[in-house]
Length: 336
Image (cartoon, rainbow, N blue to C red; front, side, top):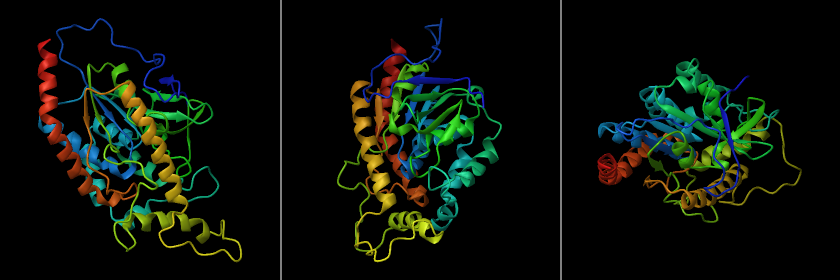
């Protein structure tokens, strides 16, 4: 596949570095309105809160000119840019634990536990023919090049593969081949792509940090009672799949896991989340947004996609709290 819109940055954790190979707006009339950019961060199931953020901004008459998305932020941002946010919200609200499990097409011949074909087919239903460069909103997704660790900005080409590359969580989903490069989750190098939004022409950037309230502990996903949580049920299904298929059946004499001890999926995702948190803090310090929206998602598990209603509500609440500051900033910027 020829992918003619790849921009690459160094994968250093700081917010600085050389300029990305992205065309900048030129000869812009200074009298034109302030260009608003959104940087939508990664956070798996917590990403449904992006829908609530976008709803409040739209109701307030704030329409972004630029959207940069990483991981789940690429999915929600891409659907919004393509005019398919209603369809995405309806899908998210329809999810139950059973349906989430049904979307996990396990396989053991690739580089991840989940092939991702079922999710791709769902995206293809509405977005198969859409291309990033023809969207009415300037949009890019963030991905990580597997071999080099470079940060990749996908600014042209088919929309669905760009989304898939951005959410290809290592070990969970297979990497995606685009333009001769194997790409995986963009949150590995840039969990909240503020720099990309600015480079694509945004005058002010509003970022959505899905982990702003989640402080890194020994484990980020917590059980708040003695019962098995929904999050643990989904994780256990992922971990048990290889045994059900006769892969890694376990050695004779293996002891059962201790109660509340982390399993494979928990360790993988928590390790990724810790890394993402550290990188996000560094990037935010080096290139802070003009406004940060941080929904209170500490009790929302990364695999709890069936809790979309709660996530969307928390996204709305966080944006409503930030809205006075956003409106004030826009007024100040327009007055300059």
